[in-house]
Amino acid sequence: MSRLSDALASGRFVVTAELNPPKGTDLTALFEKTEGLRGVVDAFNLTDSHRSQMSMSPLAVARLLVERGIDPILQMTCRDRNRIALQGDLLGAYALGVTNLLCMTGDHPVGGDHPDASPVFDLGAVELLKAISSLVSGSDIAGNELMGSPDLLAGAVVNPGAPDMDAEVRRMVEKIEAGAAFFQTQAVYDAAVFERFIERVRQYQVSIIAGHIMLKSAAMARRFNDDLPGVEVPEEIVAELNRAEGRKKEGGEIAARVIREIRPMCQGVHIMAIGWESEIPSVLSAAGITESARSGA
Image (cartoon, rainbow, N blue to C red):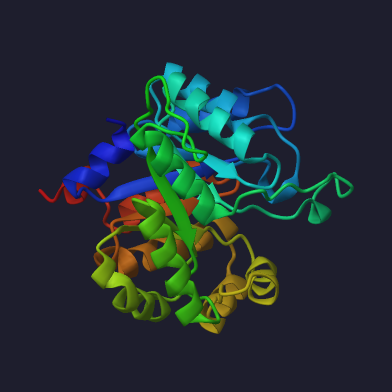
């Protein structure tokens, strides 16, 4: 079992973090971040050309982390590959010791650094989850029997603040029925909004890992409010950021407070630090998430 699957199975509070593979071949900074969080973070998401910005294959980086004894979560998007390539990569990931997956439809290339690239989107996130379930059961999605089947832990994403919550819950249920074992959420800043979402989905008894993007400025918070559907940074937090003298200090305090408030409602937290990964241990400590607290001791 991976560290992530073991933590989810045991009921221990899970901590994941997100890293972007480099646009190039130098992995020094990424390895330094993972080593600095060894034993603090259970698993690291490796994005798949995040926001359609071309970068190193996350599968290659995931294998290198496995070799270093660090648990990766391989993000797989449907943007660039058809069902043949996606299934081949899933089998390849298992052969390389990469078993944690996060399934996403992905952003359209038009917003990335290769806007003329041809999008694929042969499958969507639900269909990708079904493909994983099929492979685990011993056949591809065309019904052809496999010579050995993979053991994979598949997750998906959900937005607790989605404008149409009924549609978001229906989509989440489709993902559960397709095989999603856990969910990472869009960034959460309002505990009351998150609580209303949890009340809607508690009955499905699936692990929810709440997302949080560390805020670096009031301008960043306002951009989220303007540009990220379903993400709303409360005005009092924007005001705090406006008054802040130290950006890292204030961003860390806000993250710790939000995580402390939502922790009783979920099974883990997914921290997107965007360059502030060194702050994650202090944020967790301030949120009361110590190793003993995580284990329930």
